[in-house]
Image (cartoon, rainbow, N blue to C red; front, side, top):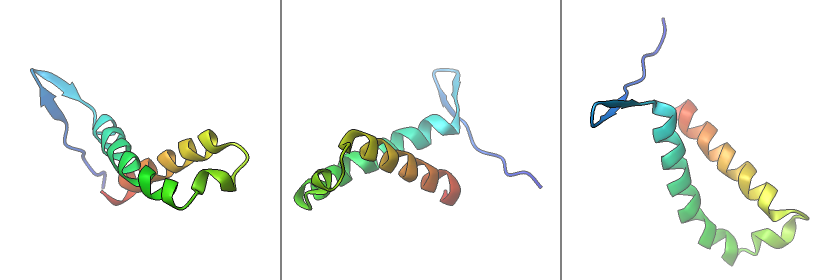
Length: 67
């Protein structure tokens, strides 16, 4: 059985659930960044932007799987 995802309608335009998940993941990531800065998270890696992108993708994947 396939799971159906509810679409959001904004002004008659259907917005895919992925867009909602991506926005929610961005909010979670932006809330998480100050805590990571306190832990000096960026100094642990040679290329911090790649790690931040990877963390965003992990949050996005977790939201898609668990919501």
